[in-house]
Picture 1: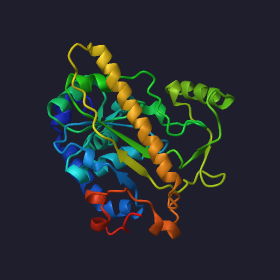
Picture 2: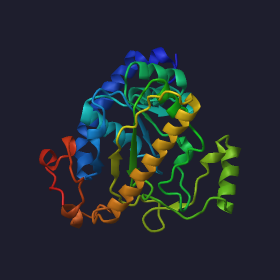
Picture 3: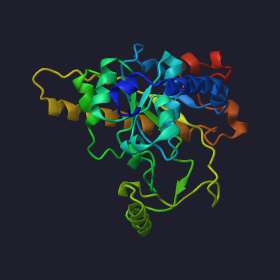
Length: 302
């Protein structure tokens, strides 16, 4: 029985996975003060349908912190666990690592398990770019690499499932890329990946953190949940055309969110987590729920 692919196992966790799930949720609750200490900019939680019936579509960054922050804030806002879709290569994992992914709600992004989750009205998270969107060469920061993928839109249309685009800025600046795509380093990295049976799209660029080291650069994270995109198919519009329309709308909305967050960050004196600028940190204009300054003890918005 495969806990990341088998539909029955996904919906009915084995006891060991259920125990891990309780531990994961306890840890998530315990680290809340740590997350808030870094004061991530979180906006748009009011856009989340309170019934939990929605598909979150996000962008991957180099450090993949979005895979943790998005479920964390959704659970705080509506009290439901998000089910992230993971790459098929993670479905081949074994032992405790696979069980831990399952305990966190993850499942391989195959159509039938996703259909079952949609029939049960569960919140789902997908990154259409997959693993290929994580490594960023110079100039590729905060760009989407969907390369025609439309499976998420097809399933959302099939089940009239609203799509909530969610963008994160900050994760692509923890490291700076020194090499550009198409250069000699990429060719070397592709050859190395192929030698060890890795996917060619996972070429890793030359990067640095603080100075010439690999010590991560401190960066504030900016997260925004966009307005839901309705997926109900109109009359007299073919399925293929409507799926393409939904996919395009989602991509355009997510790209607009990323552009807006980059503008917000450019004006934020706290963007490098400088403690001297903590009190001048930009906050969402109308913060609500768990991110409200009044409820979190944070200073009021400017």
